[in-house]
Amino acid sequence: MAAELDKDTVAKAYARWAPVYDLVFGAVFERGRKASIAAAERIGGRILEVGVGTGLSLHDYSWTNRLVGVDLSAPMLRKAKARAEEYCLTNVDALAVMDAQRLGFRDGSFDVVVAQYVITAVPDPEATLDEFARVVKPGGEIILVNHLGAEGGLRSSLEQAFAPLARRLGWRPEFRFERLTRWADGHGGVEVIERRAMPPLGHFSLIRFAKLGGAAHAPMAAAAGGARV
Ligand SMILES: C[S@@+](CC[C@H](N)C(=O)[O-])C[C@H]1O[C@@H](n2cnc3c(N)ncnc32)[C@H](O)[C@@H]1O
Image (cartoon, rainbow, N blue to C red; front, side, top):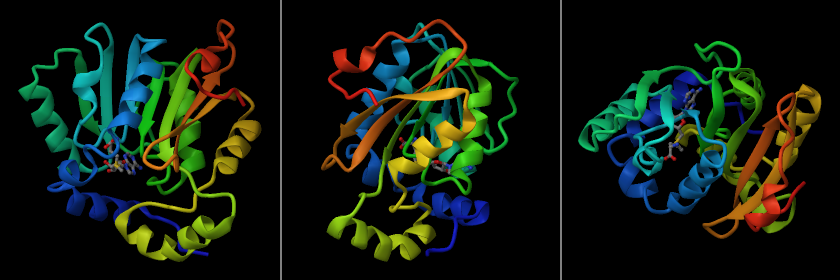
């Protein structure tokens, strides 16, 4: 089994990625980013984007939503701040260096938490998801878009083989959907309400969790072309 990620490795990896990140990952992840924003905006309100990176998605949110972005990597976040200034994004309330595993916000501070290509890059995904669930209001949603590991077959073997190198690049290619459902079942206060395949190659997914305790969630997945789980 590949070694786990640690915070230092992740911070160093993204300090190296920062200068070239937009070039390498800008276009390739764009559809997933846009789909997660569309899902978040069905709820709207106060949105926390965790692992906001260089802020590639910020200008795609509607002006009617209030945004807060956090990231572990100061070099990535500097780019996000420059981008927010360049586009005069007055709906961005704050961009701060912060660890997703220890969010400095009160319980129920946000209507939606969005994490694009982040959950497999954090040292402790379950602790991170606990924090997402804590800061989102009852009736709100956690929206992830991410690569998920194959359940078996050649792709799964390749992902396992690539895992040690991927750790140094700051991510876990073999992370499976089952780990997210196990977390949700164990947490008890959230429910997986959608998993939708995303490009490139359908190896990515958009996953929505509802925080229980608010108004009942309408069955939106079918309308969006996704599968309710
Ligand atoms: C693959 S990048 C995704 C960036 C952006 N969301 C996008 O769509 O391009 C992963 C981001 O997660 C951030 N990250 C990793 N671990 C983190 C943590 N523990 N807390 C906050 N951000 C973290 C990294 O610094 C990096 O900016």
